[in-house]
Structures are given as C-alpha cells and as structure tokens.
Length: 67
Image 1: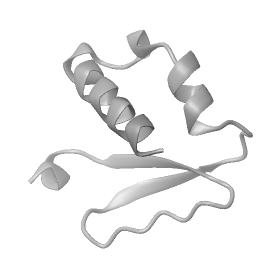
Image 2: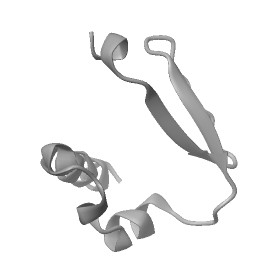
Image 3: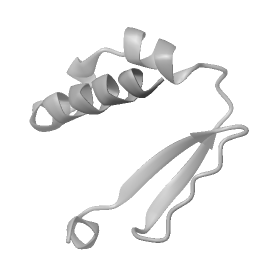
Image 4: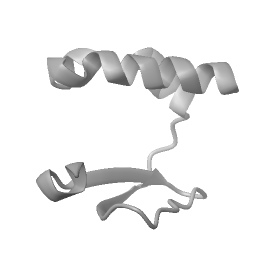
C-alpha cells in the first residue's frame, strides 16, 4: 500500500546487491567508502523527518543486535 503513495529510494554501496521483488524503488549507487556501523554512529537523525526518526532508531538497533 505504501508503494502506491511514495517512491522508495535505496542508496547502495559497491559490492552489495539490492534484492527485492516486492516494491519498486529507485536505486542510487554511491561510491562512498563508509560502513553502515559508522553511518549509524555518526549520522545525525535531525536530518530526517521527526515522524520516522523513532522507526530508524529501532531498525538500527535491531540491525546492530544481529551483527
């Protein structure tokens, strides 16, 4: 349902393939040498809408537990 309302943008890094058959998205390839761990530690959440800040925090927390 959300797929009908918004355009998803995925930023992918070299060496990582984005696999998805469910939603349509725009894939932007970035040649930035940064790990997701560093990004989580240094990215300031103030740059994303307040409505989704908590969800992003939850996703990052879940991902770091899986490592």
